[in-house]
Length: 108
Image (cartoon, rainbow, N blue to C red; front, side):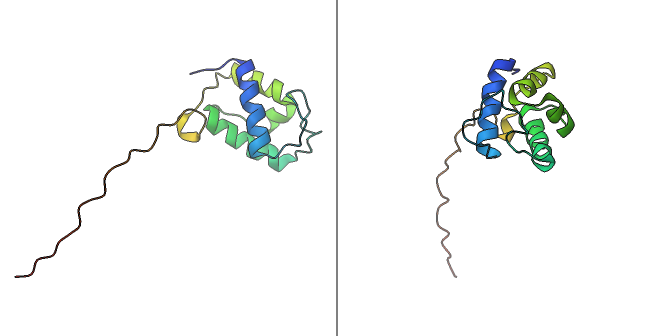
């Protein structure tokens, strides 16, 4: 399922706040530089977002776009979609199976 940039903006904002410890009070227009994100953080973001949204994204692209809103537009342009195995989508609850019966050893 692809997403529009408005939906992606909200998702990205949540990811940046939760996974990358962005400062409180940021919004989608806050520059990454203002968040004090260094090149390592941007690289980690690129890897994480590439997996979550099933696109190829580089740290240079994130830096060039400058903020969450612009990065969301880039992701939308790349056809971003949530990749369920990476935690972006709804997950099914685990299947609960009954425990196996106890093993009874019988000796002749």
